[in-house]
Amino acid sequence: MKKEQKNIKKNKIVDQYEFDEFQKWKIEKEKERIKNHVPTIYGYARVSTEEQHLEPQIKQLKNSGAKKIYQEKWTGTTTKRPIFEKLISLLLSGDTLMVTKLDRFARNTQEALTTVEDLNKRGIKIHILNMGYFDDSPNGKLMFTMFSAFAQFERDLIVNRTQEGKDYAKKYDPHYKDGRPKKFTEEQVELAWELRKQGNTYKMINRKTGISIKTLQRRFNELKLKDSE
Image 1 (cartoon, helix red, strand yellow):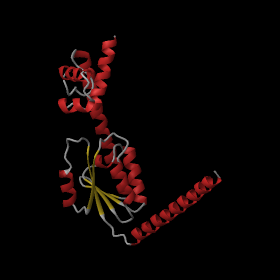
Image 2 (tube, one colour; image 1 turned 180 degrees about the vertical axis):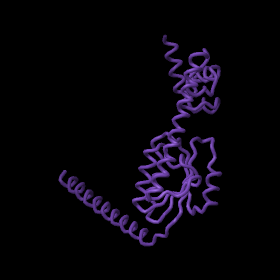
Image 3 (cartoon, rainbow, N blue to C red; image 1 turned 90 degrees about the horizontal axis):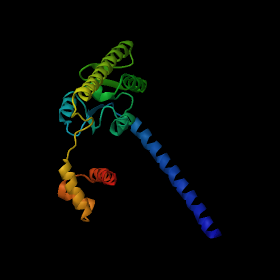
Image 4 (cartoon, rainbow, N blue to C red; image 1 turned 45 degrees about the horizontal axis):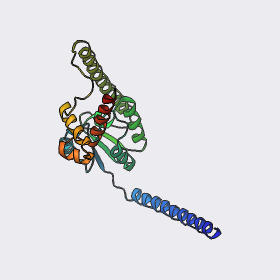
């Protein structure tokens, strides 16, 4: 027992030593990166759905001088943008962050202003192709605040119009259903349900019907509740 405890303690010391050495190596690598840094124009391209294409933004960024381009497909209202966050962490003083439009850069006015302020403090320029350069100068701050406010105003208008359309449809269209339309018909789901009753696995049903496993599980639970009523 004492021998085991001794070995555990020894392993912890080794693990801590390896961790400390790794941290030192990371610090040295970062120092080397900063020392050898050459100011670079980084492009960032983003689309909001899988159906949209990144190529037009990428082409525009390349034609405008971007040397390295980061890209991701992410909705404009979600809270996480891992590729964008990674890019921001890599930027150094003298670099330029380039995007095609304001809504590729930030989701609301406050986020835009916070990001610009942070980048400007670090000596990083922002180039929004349809607007211009934004830096830490009074004119740059004023212009960016104005454009960000207009972008937020436009987003709010779209949201309000969409909600008004939904409210009208709910009131006057008896067949209206909120949310995304169902991809599969009730007949297809019932057929899948029969296959499940016959002992088919979710993977087998997925191959035969094309319905995703998550959708099958959700719809089958709905049918179970319906049958129990």
